[in-house]
Image (cartoon, rainbow, N blue to C red; front, top):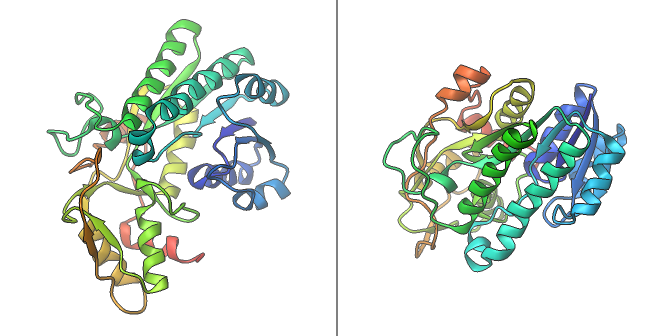
Length: 308
């Protein structure tokens, strides 16, 4: 099967590319390498995957890559994902996450793609939710431009379904972690803390450390993408463990799996635009995709540590 992955040289995208190549698919990758790397794709490229170094905002170049590969399945992961960057540069965040998504949707429709799986966010959309774990129907109240741009991207996916008949689904991730995770951005906190443990540095905790996140291992996220691609589910679907884990609890879990002196956090003021509590209700994913998180935090942390 012909597949195209935008953002395929990044942390989540490259793990997905590997899974697609392993099952025998022909894979095309679009990535501007601003955060991803060729190294992440080294094995896939050796097995025939094709990389186009393209910014998703370049709609003409995106269209050319789609016309060359004619994908049946499209996985859209290219995005600006740093909450802090979105607060400082909201127009740039919107250009990548909204206009880039439109370019991908237009190209997918033009070549007759069967299905598009869009990567979105849970905590970034729900903000300080009143229900935990939070279901998809909870009111959307982002605290940063990042969440707002991802909401707009979801809306355009649903619009293209209504307007053009392009089958789309948006996966709202929890905080993804695992092998190849970048050390930049909010979602990189596990990698940052692992780096601190290996380098003997104290991890910086913003706020009191009792803020919670729903950590989900990248292998589980890859499996969710594969299941979503073969389903007919539309609209948003939460992809998370459904559990709240505080930053301080994360540090304790790391201390249990990392050799050497224990991590002792250094506290700093909390950052603008970040939510206090986050956990996603995965009931729809379980019911309609047959997906549940399988990797517990301790196992996932050991996997993330292994390649380093």
